[in-house]
Image (cartoon, rainbow, N blue to C red):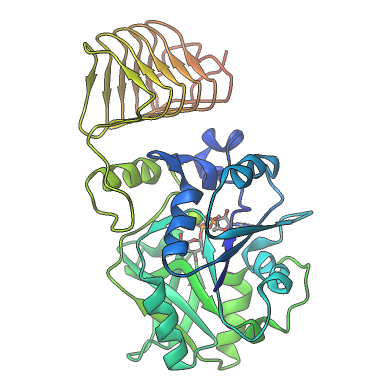
Amino acid sequence: MRAVVLVGGEGTRLRPLTETIKKELLPLMDRAVLHHTLDHLSRHGVHEVILSSSYLEDTFRSFIEARRGDPTITWITETEPLGTGGAIVNALSSVGTGEPFLALNGDIVTDLDVTAMVATHRTRGAAATIALAHVDDARAFGLVATQADGRVLEFREKPQEQVPGDINAGTYVLEPSALSRWEPPGSLSIERDVFPALIADGLPIYGFSSDAYWIDLGTPEKYLQAHFDMLDGKVGSAPHYATPFVADSAAVHDGARLGRRAVVCAGARVERDAVVEDSVVHPHAVVEEGATVRRSILGPRSRVGGGAVVNRSVLAEGAAVPAGVALDEARVSAGQVAASTERTGAPGRMG
Ligand code: GDD
Ligand code: MG
């Protein structure tokens, strides 16, 4: 089976991390998000994935070169962003006709039983099957209304009212023939254009409900939460991780204190008397002596100076916090130095 994994979004809500790193390539515990996704697909019999992006394309090259084993990766360059539907339609020539295929958002973590979903799709004779998750507030998602047998009645992307309900969990089984009316390469949204059109035409579109673990990594809070959930063993498809998680090549001083929900990635260093709680320290980042880091993400090669306090903040790749500075809810851009103490909730001032 083949799968199109959508990896071409800008990751706006995850800035400044995504200034230099695609959200699907951010580290999640000990490997890139996309590795978790591809490993999961491989376990469900997916042998080939098609990836496409127009944004930070170069950063995928080293990922693809380093990736070993199933599934094989076919890369398609989007000369301009085609949208979620456009990217899928543009990949149809690589997907082939006749057999259903998978398409999925690349920024989700799930242990969805893809095999069962495909089997249900075939049994129902569906043109498209949409994995569903239940949320209390559907505003950030696509709200999917179904009838008792699972058939989709309506797909409403980003509803304005705060309502609970079943939402699009971003994994689809699709029949290529259902997409034949759209010509590549055109810009198209699967949520706003494709699904509403298919439903209006009366095609059999079904929802697939399950109690699978599911999270969209689109914000710093959700990105941290995905780490906490993996540490708590809530993600069935993920490897077992020790708490706190310290990569083999990371160096944590005996006199440093790590909370249970700390993640210290490869090559990172946490020095004497430093405290790291509820935070993710990316590869080769450094937390110097006596610094405190809470509910924060320290990007690759970022540095927190001695005695500094970093709370609920995000440092992009190579960002630095000088010794003794206190940051609260700051965002520090790639390669920038946090110049002043901020306790306002406003973005950190860059030096
Ligand atoms: N190739 C390509 N080209 N990929 C794209 C493009 C594009 O132009 N635009 C977005 N993507 C990718 C993103 O990288 C991401 O992996 C995925 O498509 C979804 O885009 P997001 O920007 O993250 O959308 P969202 O989170 O606001 O909403 C989507 O996901 C929700 C579930 O997480 C929608 O599918 C909602 O309906 C859904 O509920
Ligand atoms: Mg998303």
